[in-house]
Length: 213
Ligand SMILES: C[S@@+](CC[C@H](N)C(=O)[O-])C[C@H]1O[C@@H](n2cnc3c(N)ncnc32)[C@H](O)[C@@H]1O
Image (tube, rainbow, N blue to C red; front, side, top):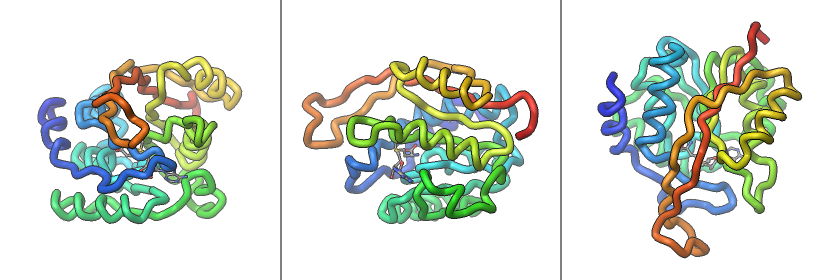
């Protein structure tokens, strides 16, 4: 599927009804979601026929796109039942049947569900960026992603945290390739947002190991 067709299809995905600031609920804009998924498939063949996890799936933007690009099964995982309800509606609306949803806390996922360790071929995530309210949440999400993956992890991070993440990856013995720098246009979502929208520079990072782990 062409990038522009994927992006236009993703524009139909409904977002959070009442976004929760503590959970950093910002839907990935369709143009960014399309680029992440298109790169994973077109450049690396990491979606078609693969078992995929979407950590912090929210309303399913990345899960739906992965399914559209041929993932065999995608499991969308989020702690928020309201977001999962919207996700379910999006799946029904799009007639997508190979996405399963799991309500769980990503930070304790591999302890709570030990069978998921190394279960997924490809893990995709737009994690909470780990603001002042949730320091370290971005890193905790990536650690879980690596624990449940037997293959690769695609994750979105503020460009300002790039050196921190690359250092962490080195500590974990994982390769971290910055595939793209993108502009995340964050619409005015919460009361504390003063401007109509803010552009944030984000990196798409692909974490991998040279041999199976
Ligand atoms: C930035 S949003 C991304 C949503 C969606 N993946 C997308 O791309 O549009 C982060 C998501 O992580 C979820 N989340 C935050 N903390 C979580 C946790 N501890 N466990 C599971 N999900 C969590 C939020 O509910 C939210 O849906």
